[in-house]
Length: 306
Image 1 (cartoon, rainbow, N blue to C red):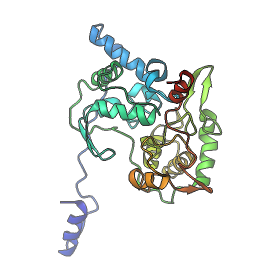
Image 2: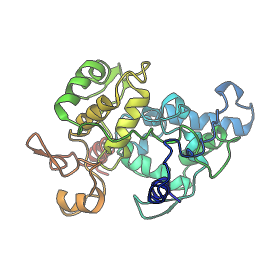
Image 3: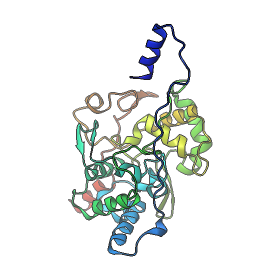
Image 4: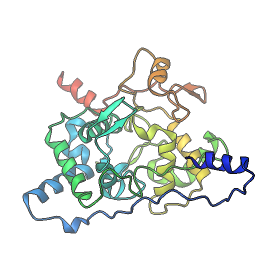
């Protein structure tokens, strides 16, 4: 019986409704193993390979990556940090049904989606050594965790709806004050030589319109729990919603599932208040001027004629 239904029945019976009805059971807390505890074995070697791919994805899995993001760009502390979609909390929940593609996904298929959308690239084959290494790393992080259970810190934090509707102008002010110093005034990210220190948040070098981070709720929860880097929790919920809206109200690479038109693609894949794809913001229809998906992979193919 839901809490709302219970309150209704109590009120109908003329009974006092306590403000402190039983709360949901707390989620189990899990701490993944430290990097120092990796075994010096062949298995440990595979775990280290997966960890390095996770941290240096364009360098070590470049044939599948179309931008300059690493897995660790969105899954902080090498996939260990709670409320940053940690790998130890994801591993124990797969296989799982996903509404995004309407069927039960294996963990390998889930990772393929990350390469296709978040990395703006292409999916590695399910038996590719890249996916094997990443899954081995995730298994090791979750090796002592209970399976089939949602753990504390799983996914991105779910914020309550904002008190005021998320706003572009307010979000721009938050971005300029707290985010631009790392991610650039135009969301272009920041490099140290050829090495990307802070990822691009929009534009051709960022995640595409199919990535989960383009959803305002995911971005707001991630920002609230983790940003500014090293000062997590500084922003109010409202500021997190506003700056997430601002970030995702900019153009980025096209959704690789694009079909017929922006309107048709929105109707099929983005028909939600959580997505700005196909919505006009500041006179621009988002998605209408999106670069083709594939990024650097397209450029490489054009150079080689492939």
